[in-house]
Length: 282
Ligand code: C2E
Ligand code: MG
Ligand code: MG
Ligand code: MG
Image 1 (cartoon, rainbow, N blue to C red):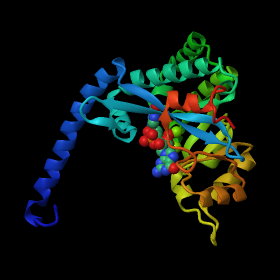
Image 2 (cartoon, rainbow, N blue to C red):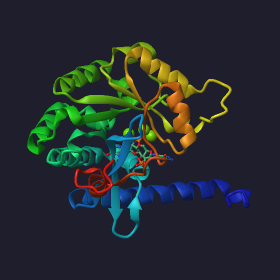
Image 3 (tube, helix red, strand yellow):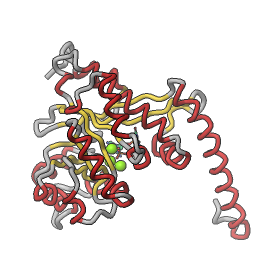
């Protein structure tokens, strides 16, 4: 469209930016209200093991906008990060996630499942983050050993020592850590070794590449080998086909997450499908 009228291009580009900015400002105002008004929810996506059995879930935040419908986190998390709204949003996710974990303790099947929460850099870097987590665990009765926090490589860039110290304090509570979207950032291998991590999550971008008739060694293979040599678990995200899970298994990755197994679903639905009272229990 912009290409059709060459002369107008710079101006049109400006107009597009302006509109985006305006939308951002509106969304920010609406998000501020949404956090306190019950418009957020957690959807859970199963994480499955070698036999494709559910071993846990990742919580993914959803925003139900009264007019615009469901807005994806890809759209509003960046706005939340720029504006600082990620702090109340992140606190809500932590509370809601721990509340679910606490609830699951009353069910003989759900109580064994793990729950992963995404934690943004700014949220993790709050001076009182460890206290926030401790308080929330206590208030909800969530077992810390069932809780995994997903961090991204960018966190490790800004304040490595502070990060390691905080991770160690949280680990002493029993919490585990996964490095999300691994391979898309820029962490040095030396540094990776010094981190108290439990799991690497292979980014969807490297899972997409996998085919059964593969000739070249894929990046996923390198990440799996790296995890093994560092003594870390590895999870593949974005598994969409049986072939991808077969290749991953062959490469030595035995925990998977992706549409092939299940899309993220409302927490209540996940609990229903995986509870001891579920008729479809496997
Ligand atoms: P992520 O943590 O890497 O989450 C994985 C994303 O991949 C999710 O997108 C999930 O729905 C999607 N996904 C899962 N399986 C497949 C698949 O087979 N194919 C494809 N194409 N996609 C798949 P979603 O829910 O839109 O979340 C996007 C990102 O937003 C997350 O990436 C995470 O960085 C951020 N996010 C989501 N929830 C939270 C939260 O509670 N707090 C923070 N700080 N960030 C969050
Ligand atoms: Mg994640
Ligand atoms: Mg990810
Ligand atoms: Mg991602």
